[in-house]
Length: 75
Length: 227
Image 1 (cartoon, each protein chain N blue to C red):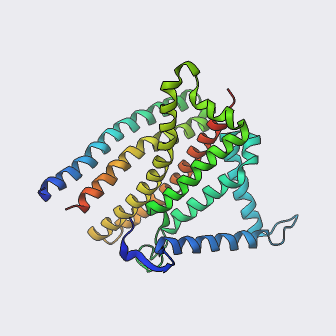
Image 2 (cartoon, each protein chain N blue to C red):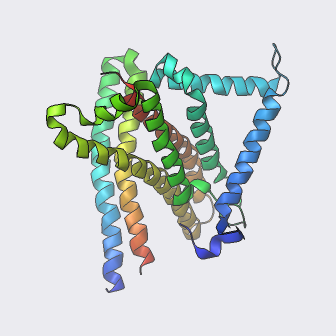
Image 3 (cartoon, chains in turn green, red):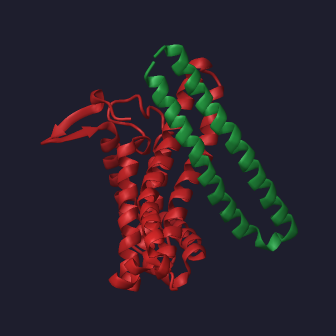
């Protein structure tokens, strides 16, 4: 395949995964902030749940980035 | 990623890469440090012993919050080993020369290393599950509720086998991606900018070690929970 198409695909993979994950992580973080503001004494457990859920979302971006690296390696 | 040119030397059929030699060095350093810290235990500890005591105490509090007191105390060695080993591996990539000198590379930026860690994590989960709940009881728990077992069993089995893959890919992807991004930044603008990325890496390395061990302890607490 033409290398230009592969480059475009690699860029698109990272752009789309990063955009969607950023939106989702923003929602999650804002909800966690709300929860901490409402119940400051539960901040510790909220924070650990937040870190886990952010990491699980982050993994999807990382998979996208791996695919992008693989695609770039094919050029 | 492993390349044929990375192979330093061979022991029989085994290829020894830079990541492997770095891991040997890390194991040696950790062994030496823990030997030095526990060599002569005193009531009033010296600097090294108190540093080790504080670190281990914090780590134990962290696991007691996640797993409950009895199980955290019982299985503390394996969890602490995972955490200390992963965090030292991650931080070794920030030392000058990592990835450029021969025989010195960030171990967790190689999929083989993280896959090995994930396989150990997989067996840890199931061995602890079987030990706590008994063989029959533990494996029957994958088919609960029984009238839906034809649906639940494949789903649960797939989940169990996807978990180590996602653990391995997450750690590998984060570390490899971070290294590649720092390197590319260095090529674009060598002064100052990579420093910002390195400061961020200090945070990410800790976070990845925390996430790996936190997920592992969640899997374990799921495996030992009583219905």
